[in-house]
Image 1 (tube, rainbow, N blue to C red):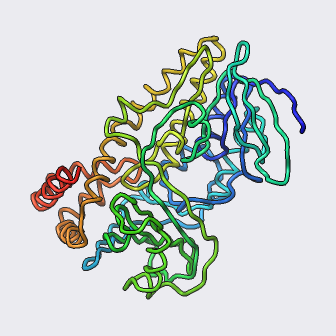
Image 2: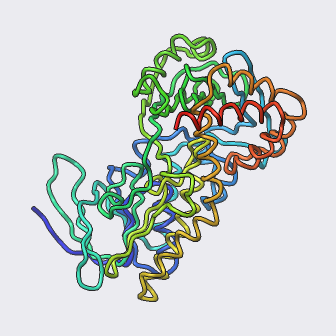
Image 3: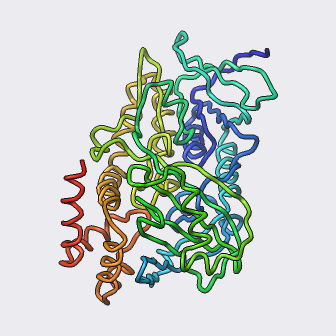
Length: 419
């Protein structure tokens, strides 16, 4: 068994958007930084619907976005069982983009390496222990056919290793109690317009929604997530197969071909009090551990998206980690939680409330809601105020509508009695 010692200021476990951004900003601020990635290549396998905003592209700081954009979408159609709600953005600033996540992630990793970070592939964290003036991180080869361990000394370890974070488990940090179970394919699909399609309903995707996201003129990413707490089946594949064969819209447009099957899960923060109770930092005897991205449940509970929040918090994590190392004071790491709370805490807390209420809605409730939203003034409000990165903006306005408020009030009562 091969063992050797390396020394770094900051070691980032996970080479996704959050991890690469954390590494980039740690290195940019003078920290000797290493990225440890479990897979054989950055960005693979892809486990994401790959739909991000223009704001997220700008946040990525990647100059040539054409290299990873599949297509630009000008809005979405929301399908309930009896209503179709078309929402088109009047501004190019609010349009969404279907992207190649593999290329996107590689570009982010390249940016981190250009700032001076190092990269190790096919490795994952095994243990984190106190050692002298820092942390001794043991990483092991992730490939079953290869045996070997590497011991790395680090002052700060950043866990960016996803919803099943090993770093979080080792550090005893629990940020997610429940998860959305997700599944997706790429396949032939009848594309009518440059619009994402969202399918809501308890029989279609209990506790969440299904989607069809165009990636070219004849192909879409077709998938869904479910919240197992309100689903009759725990396996989302059951619902995907049913939708592909029986859903009145999906089955009609789906053309039978299938590639790139993926499955994964999205973390749901432990409590509504994200800003006050979520713990993503641990400091023990001068050893610092941070969590970022899905490992920290930094996702939008309403849409499940985490790329934008992960990159935003990744920058904060990298900067704070570098600062703690340069000042020789791990207590500085506590600034990270405050920084993230200011950026996304309220949004996540509100989104979690909306998600919990969504879990109580029946197919009939979704129909009534889509009908109420189809009125001109509501459509204008959604088109003008809708924001995929900060969905609470428009939701706070929508619940002021009497019809929506009445429906939500009934759902709140059901939610309270169901607790």
